Image (cartoon, rainbow, N blue to C red; front, side, top):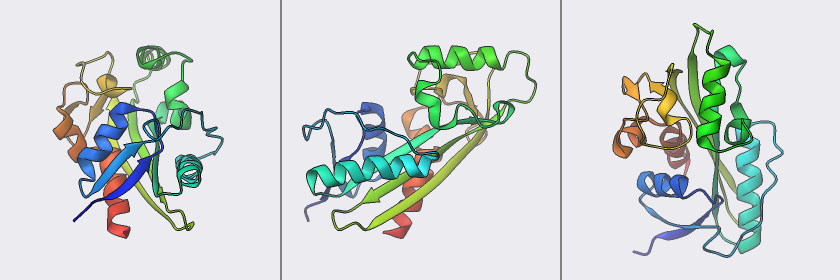
Length: 189
């Protein structure tokens, strides 16, 4: 049986790979592969709103189902920041984001944090299904490991009892916020 093709509203190759590894019943194609090279203005105030904005734009553009995720790191000592601004926290790349986070927390004893994810699957007829997930942990005092991407090397997962930076992709995918959001979504399909 042919798998349903779904456009992924992301240019992030790491995210696309992770989604495909988790939702194996579908055939995913990135918006870049479809020829979409524009930027999508993520002007929502929540992960869920941003996921919808991206999924709707790509679904409308290609008249096909589109899946979008918006996720980020929420640190209690920073009032939930960087939150929806996780990818652009420092104005630089992943390493600069991690270094800024560590600097902001250098005198903090409370380092609890969670990764949060909202996923949105939008169909051309307007039907929309959401999934949400979180992964609890804390921010380490320095980077540990080189696996993953984003904040993974500074995030200690309570589930795995180690840094996402040293976890294998399989270990991380089994407990990640995106895994939980995608499974929440899958349970509603």
